[in-house]
Length: 104
Image 1 (cartoon, rainbow, N blue to C red):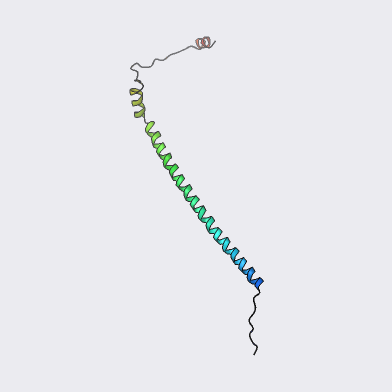
Image 2 (image 1 turned 45 degrees about the vertical axis):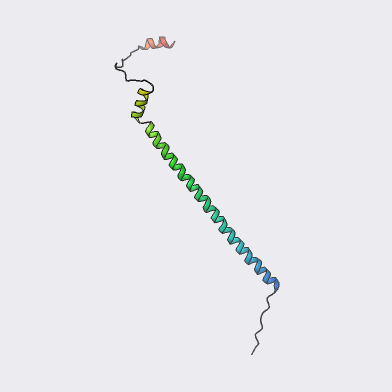
Protein backbone atom coordinates (compact mmCIF):
# COMPACT_ATOMS: atom_id res chain seq x y z
CA UNK A 1 0.00 0.00 0.00
CA UNK A 2 0.88 3.48 -0.56
CA UNK A 3 1.77 5.56 2.43
CA UNK A 4 -0.33 8.64 3.03
CA UNK A 5 1.75 11.76 3.20
CA UNK A 6 0.42 14.91 4.73
CA UNK A 7 0.36 17.83 2.42
CA UNK A 8 2.35 20.78 3.63
CA UNK A 9 0.61 24.13 3.63
CA UNK A 10 2.86 26.92 2.60
CA UNK A 11 3.09 29.99 4.77
CA UNK A 12 2.30 32.23 1.79
CA UNK A 13 -0.98 30.40 1.06
CA UNK A 14 -1.90 30.53 4.73
CA UNK A 15 -1.29 34.29 4.87
CA UNK A 16 -3.28 34.89 1.66
CA UNK A 17 -6.23 32.94 3.05
CA UNK A 18 -5.95 34.86 6.33
CA UNK A 19 -6.04 38.24 4.58
CA UNK A 20 -8.95 37.21 2.35
CA UNK A 21 -10.92 35.98 5.38
CA UNK A 22 -10.11 39.17 7.30
CA UNK A 23 -11.22 41.27 4.31
CA UNK A 24 -14.54 39.41 4.08
CA UNK A 25 -15.15 39.82 7.82
CA UNK A 26 -14.36 43.56 7.66
CA UNK A 27 -16.69 43.93 4.66
CA UNK A 28 -19.62 42.27 6.46
CA UNK A 29 -19.06 44.19 9.71
CA UNK A 30 -18.92 47.44 7.73
CA UNK A 31 -22.20 46.55 6.02
CA UNK A 32 -23.85 45.84 9.38
CA UNK A 33 -22.67 49.19 10.77
CA UNK A 34 -23.87 51.03 7.64
CA UNK A 35 -27.30 49.37 7.78
CA UNK A 36 -27.68 50.20 11.47
CA UNK A 37 -26.86 53.86 10.86
CA UNK A 38 -29.37 53.97 7.99
CA UNK A 39 -32.04 52.46 10.23
CA UNK A 40 -31.37 55.10 12.90
CA UNK A 41 -31.51 57.88 10.29
CA UNK A 42 -34.74 56.46 8.84
CA UNK A 43 -36.29 56.28 12.30
CA UNK A 44 -35.30 59.89 13.05
CA UNK A 45 -36.76 61.04 9.74
CA UNK A 46 -39.99 59.13 10.39
CA UNK A 47 -40.26 60.74 13.84
CA UNK A 48 -39.72 64.19 12.33
CA UNK A 49 -42.39 63.51 9.69
CA UNK A 50 -44.85 62.42 12.38
CA UNK A 51 -44.19 65.62 14.35
CA UNK A 52 -44.71 67.71 11.20
CA UNK A 53 -47.97 65.90 10.37
CA UNK A 54 -49.22 66.49 13.91
CA UNK A 55 -48.27 70.16 13.69
CA UNK A 56 -50.02 70.49 10.32
CA UNK A 57 -53.18 68.88 11.72
CA UNK A 58 -53.13 71.27 14.67
CA UNK A 59 -52.70 74.25 12.37
CA UNK A 60 -55.54 73.03 10.12
CA UNK A 61 -57.80 72.75 13.18
CA UNK A 62 -56.81 76.28 14.22
CA UNK A 63 -57.58 77.60 10.71
CA UNK A 64 -60.99 75.95 10.74
CA UNK A 65 -61.73 77.40 14.19
CA UNK A 66 -60.66 80.90 13.18
CA UNK A 67 -62.54 80.88 9.87
CA UNK A 68 -65.79 79.85 11.53
CA UNK A 69 -68.44 82.48 10.73
CA UNK A 70 -69.58 82.69 14.36
CA UNK A 71 -66.05 83.48 15.51
CA UNK A 72 -65.62 86.12 12.81
CA UNK A 73 -69.04 87.63 13.61
CA UNK A 74 -68.28 87.84 17.34
CA UNK A 75 -64.87 89.40 16.66
CA UNK A 76 -66.38 91.95 14.26
CA UNK A 77 -69.11 92.98 16.70
CA UNK A 78 -67.14 92.89 19.97
CA UNK A 79 -63.67 94.07 19.00
CA UNK A 80 -64.29 96.19 15.90
CA UNK A 81 -67.77 97.54 16.69
CA UNK A 82 -69.22 96.50 13.34
CA UNK A 83 -72.96 95.90 13.06
CA UNK A 84 -75.33 94.78 10.36
CA UNK A 85 -76.93 97.69 8.54
CA UNK A 86 -80.62 98.19 9.23
CA UNK A 87 -81.12 99.97 5.89
CA UNK A 88 -81.50 97.99 2.72
CA UNK A 89 -78.89 98.67 0.08
CA UNK A 90 -79.93 101.06 -2.67
CA UNK A 91 -79.46 100.36 -6.33
CA UNK A 92 -77.43 102.97 -8.15
CA UNK A 93 -77.84 103.39 -11.87
CA UNK A 94 -75.38 105.37 -13.95
CA UNK A 95 -75.82 106.10 -17.61
CA UNK A 96 -72.96 105.34 -19.93
CA UNK A 97 -72.51 109.01 -20.85
CA UNK A 98 -72.22 109.97 -17.18
CA UNK A 99 -69.67 107.24 -16.66
CA UNK A 100 -67.61 108.54 -19.57
CA UNK A 101 -67.73 112.06 -18.14
CA UNK A 102 -66.53 110.74 -14.74
CA UNK A 103 -63.72 108.73 -16.32
CA UNK A 104 -62.31 111.83 -18.10
